[in-house]
Length: 155
Image 1: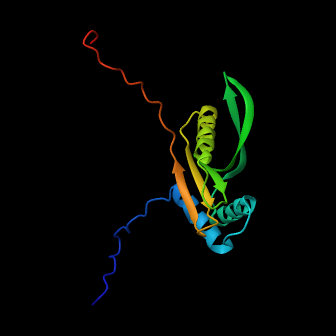
Image 2: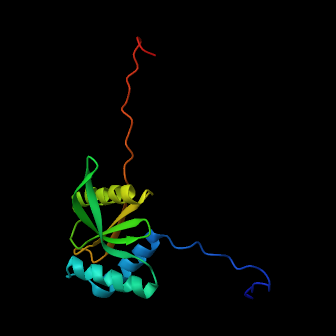
Image 3: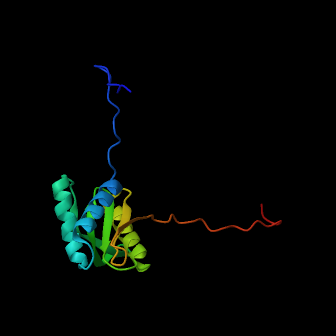
């Protein structure tokens, strides 16, 4: 069977640009595949930074996020990595604790308040049981409107 070659002048199909999530997943899988299990969170964090540098990906590390209360800063948090509008929290445990979701959501809320734009949160767990990099997007829950019970007296 003869292979078809594209005719001259015909545009090649374009690939969609990689999203921050694609870059994070690719980086995390490479790091875990190279290092394996048994390292501290800080080692995986630094390895992610080295890999992002080699990939030419811009990021920020250990970004201070303010904790606001009644319009005043009452403390700070530190986001492990930020790529564009994506906040990355790195873990290195057998199963990711549920409290991480709340932590990431607070980082997202804080950054959105400071930057005045929408952000996304991602947890990367270098799973020490499976030897895999688990990458999970953490969505911020929108404030739900309270349910209003209809009454025959009020319409």
